[in-house]
Length: 395
Ligand code: SAH
Image 1: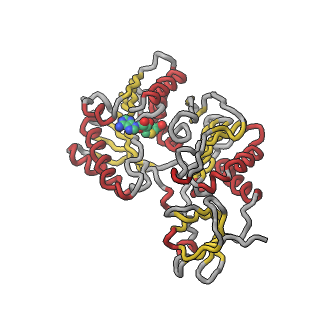
Image 2: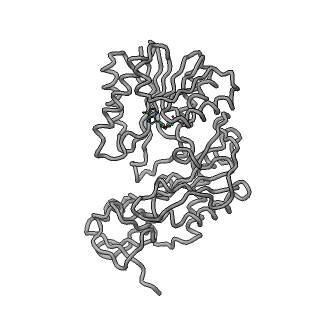
Image 3: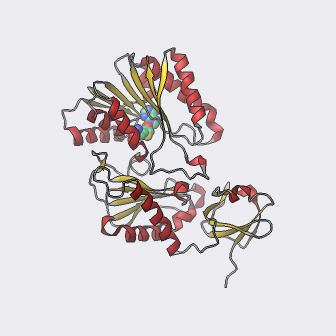
């Protein structure tokens, strides 16, 4: 039998792993037996050669992403059990068979003990995104197992990993269907209809993580004039109109996104809906806003992808929120978000607080928001909590 590849940790470096943290940083590795290829499953042992974990090896600051802390084989049965576990959780959330909501996240990386893997379900199509080489190499098997688990309910799996894999890995990934083909049917979210283009859209095609927060916008929308900035394909806009908004303006710098936002509004409310889709920079747009809006949504892309640029990101959030808070009509409601993993809840709140102080308005926090339950946080990997939101009442 071939010698299995083993990674030996430096003395004391097993500590975070004994608390089930799923990442092994390259600095914690003392020796490697064998010559693992990137993406290979390796065994991790402590300085006394005692078994610690098994996971995907990769060159980079995270050397191993842990798949299991048990001394078990990572075979087809293992993958099936993990994916079934993820399905069971969505079943418990009422998402697996919902008539109202047909798009949800099935696998949320570390949150589902599958580090490096994202799978989103859009009706009968699953979109898979590998963030690690190991997951990328396993994609075909994952697709086959999903097909088995879902049966006829799944007609296609689309692999969209080209933008999420490490560039230098030289895998030359090409996005495409692992089986099946495009469906083109709109999906449902809380009864609202949305067209999702996973082939050309951002991320896996839709920002599923705002589902609960969109519903809350709908609850505040009645009788209000709404500005939805960074609207992408109009998620918040559709809920606002559904909730009885008088008018909604949707702003995004991507022309293609606002076109789809307009289409999504028409899909739900026809061409007569009081909605305007505007392709424009949100910072610029807010500069010229007077006091015509009494509900504003700020949902920018991650300003900080790394800890290094945290300072700039916080300045960005401060500036953006100052602008919106100073322009919103008295008695207005501001929904403000950050999806940067590097920005903590505390940081974000302070940035918004500074923005409010610049605007000089009385501001109260009504709700503190986060990601929905199909984006679970592994308790041993608190870094997985990335979405933060505040609902503010501005006097
Ligand atoms: N709120 C959306 C998701 C937002 S994602 C939803 O519910 O689906 C962030 C969006 O910000 C992207 O669509 C991106 O095109 C847009 N964007 C990025 N920089 C921008 C800028 N400076 N001004 C306006 N939009 C911007």
